[in-house]
Structure formats: structure tokens, C-alpha cells
Image 1: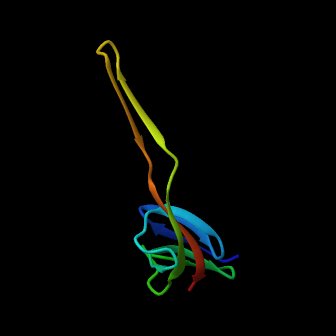
Image 2: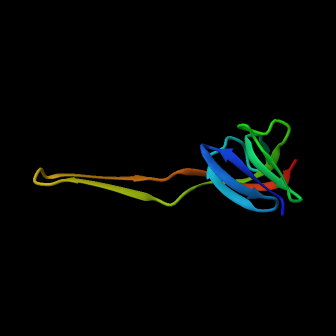
Image 3: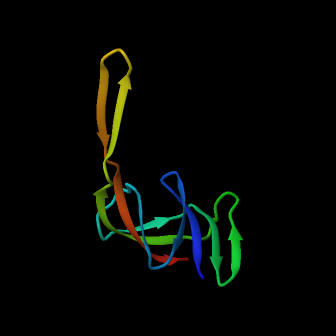
Length: 103
């Protein structure tokens, strides 16, 4: 089982080849290949590599499949006895990546 733990967008994600992941927005056009170089941990054929803090010689190549927006979060604030009500919504920009290789 080949996998890696990569830091992308302030989050640490366990990734495997051939699977897709939804991450915070990454600039680029759909079809572009992105190189992720902040690899924290890597397992390849039961041999492990641990970065201090990152692995220098390793790289993950992923293809941008599409950009989209996540589900809507509603924020509703109330202050009791003050007749204060505030309703806001938020939708996060996301990018779907397909992991091609872990080198």
C-alpha cells in the first residue's frame, strides 16, 4: 500500500494514488497538473520515510479536475432582549484533485 501524508491548505491529508480529494481552493485551470511538495510522511512498499518537517526529494503530482463551492453554512446570531438578529451564509471555494503519482 503506497500512501503519503501531505500538508495542503493548512490541513494534513492522507492521500493515495488514483483517488480524488476535495481541498481548499488551489489556483489553476481544470486539467493542470499541480506538484505538492510539502510531504510529511511517505510509505512505499512497507518502507517509511518521515520528514523533518518535510521530505525534500519527494513530490506528489495531482491533476485539477474541477473547481466548485461547498455546501452552504448558515450563521445565525441572536442577542436576547435586544431585538438583534443577524443571519449570514458562507460557501467555501473548493478544488477537486486526482492524485496521479507519488514520486
